[in-house]
Length: 301
Image 1: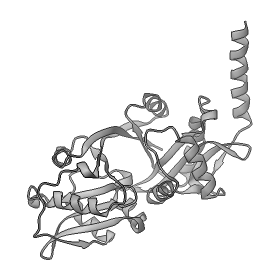
Image 2 (image 1 turned 135 degrees about the vertical axis):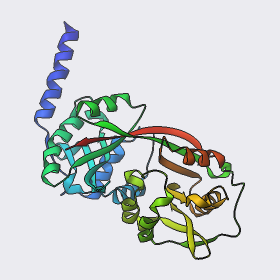
Image 3 (image 1 turned 120 degrees about the horizontal axis):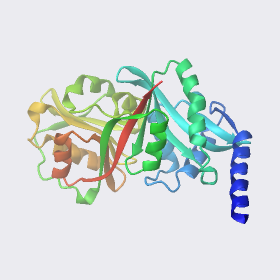
Image 4 (image 1 turned 90 degrees about the vertical axis):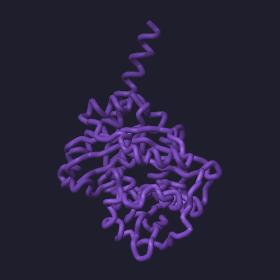
């Protein structure tokens, strides 16, 4: 009987907690309050961030506080979804920059309540599709997303390696490297073997241009490859070589340029299409190892 009483008390408490919570957008909240909630929710996550990286990440991914939402326990954020907004694949899209619940509020279905509240508002704002990414080993989250109408739309591999373990065996001394304006990247789309994910898209690079290094590899006046790297995190957003110039050391030379630009001890290459054998083979050839894997999931609104 005592066990049943405890169980019923917990259920009642959770129901009351949800009743007295308010879901609203984050348009009036300061970035410090939002980042505080992010750090609290993801303190035990597989991937760690520092405060400046969170702010830079949100800017690069198109964060819109007025179209982001949270469940509030009084003035305290209990659960949230931070949304980026932009065009992706020619469609007005909302991208989940981060959905989290603070530890003391978990297990109450708050993230689902936040999404259900926000979906009609996003539709009214002209958003046609909702896009998110989830680690493949996070079975519970995948199940929740499927129950809310999401379907897998892409399969990604993620790579990383300590800089001193990267093997740059073939470097081209005949190449010239020059800064490349982000506006030039759209004209080099044919260099890529797969569509970059939201966080690595040209639109994302444009938004985060101030914190990124974009360099082109030139043979004479012709740009034959390029790399986009974040010096603060070691994240390579894009690295691509014109098909006719591959297997000549251009990619390895670009990786060498990226390595010299970063201020941390590790390179990351996130969200490589799992079916892109060319990029996987290249990364293996320079000693960059496969690590976490994740799905992109989408729901038409």
